[in-house]
Image (tube, rainbow, N blue to C red; front, top):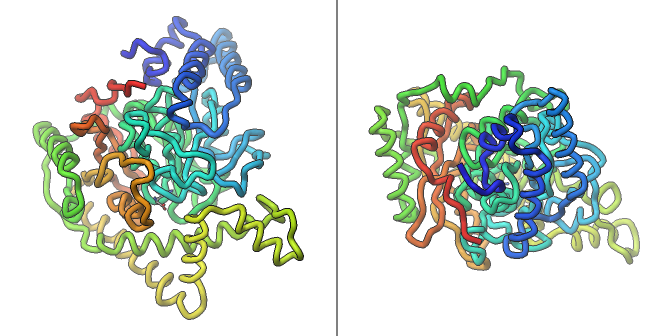
Length: 487
Ligand code: GLN
């Protein structure tokens, strides 16, 4: 149990709210005070709205007093990545293009959080249009890693991970297209889950690569992640890729699903480029599962070497199409002194988008253009099928896969200037998105330099209940999540 309110888990805070030894307003005030104290160094937020958060907290207290509390999220302050729409709140995607945009409607995820009684606290920084692995592509400012503010928090949902690690929210939401929840979770020492493609509605999520994007929670414990995931998951007729499936009570299932599991170690995920301290921490986690009676065996995902290329063809192709709408007419920044309509498009997009976003639009337009479509886009789609098949073949032998989340711990701001070096940060996470699978990153130790390390567990489609139980069995036996950065 954390003495400081802002470091409470949702489960701890919910128990106190229920016992009426704590009010939602007190909790929200504590989180706001913490945010004000650390934000000059962490810079995880793009905007905050204190009055609305406190009003939602007061409404939660009133509901509870009247005997109508809505469950474990009622009165809990939750922050949202600035690509997830909340009605009447700014929605910038970390881009100058949307610097002054205010969302006219709620995303389904935000609406569901509010139905569960959560207090929405702030808009969290991210790489521009969720493209990046360090938060340095935000058009507004970089975010510091709370464990060492001269280092990156990861990305693209870096603000979501950093705010939680710093005690500026009790949970946050991010989005994950190629690793953007799991990699920053690993670098900041918190739990992050990317759900199966189709489990959480993408309605009201600013689209990056629509066949890969998923919204998911960051939380301090796997139990907390289970609570938030249950609140936001479920079929939504406003997202045509949303899947009809029963949403179990993931938190209750943590108690009933106890293994032992058969775990696969994909040999392609333990090779060159993996930091030795991360390898050692993951080895210790493997030893833990073995001691719990799990069967561990090596498996192969033979098309892993094509993941990065495949991802950067499909993701950029979809991005070039999705970002066409930001033309200064229908959406987004409009250039002031354009000569004519064509010039207006050129100038608005030149001024509104940053360098990485432009690089991807150009790449994506190229792989979709006639003459190159078959050679790149169509072929990438075929390789994608092979990559998914690799995972499904592995699941004939094992229940889940265990890997490092990130090959390296948090690096220095400004350290990686080469785009390819940055793309390699996602080497262990992108295969999961291409295959549409669920995966979770759980803290599993620290480097000698006191930087967090993450363990990735990859599950089977729509088997989040098993995946969370597997992760929880590790998480509750270790106290990594009760350590907090000194800020
Ligand atoms: N870093 C990867 C990219 O830049 C993944 C980003 C994400 O998951 N949104 O595309």
